[in-house]
Length: 109
Image (tube, rainbow, N blue to C red; front, top):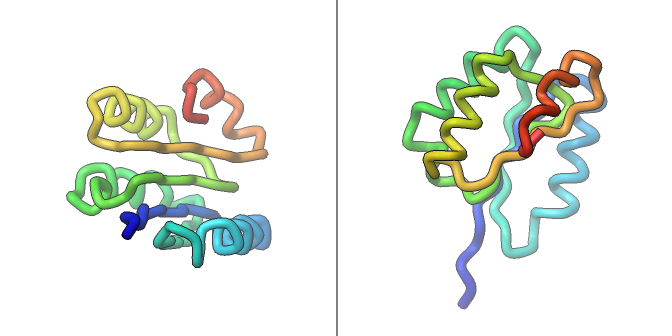
């Protein structure tokens, strides 16, 4: 019996974000993954992401995907540090907005 991997998808509340959810559900659900999806607004993304980073809940996930929404430079640095220290297993940010261009300096964005 194989062990199921846990995936967290953090995405925007707009139509693009729901498109990301549909793709995540298509790819991850029913396979060897358990998928949790959380929709976030721009004004709450940093707070919610930091709460996840500093909670035990983050360690439950094998993969975390953030799509169609971006984070501040400060939160990005915290994510990078958490990845480097091993507190997060896998994190990937995929965002097509101009506000995310500065995050391209990170391997995970």
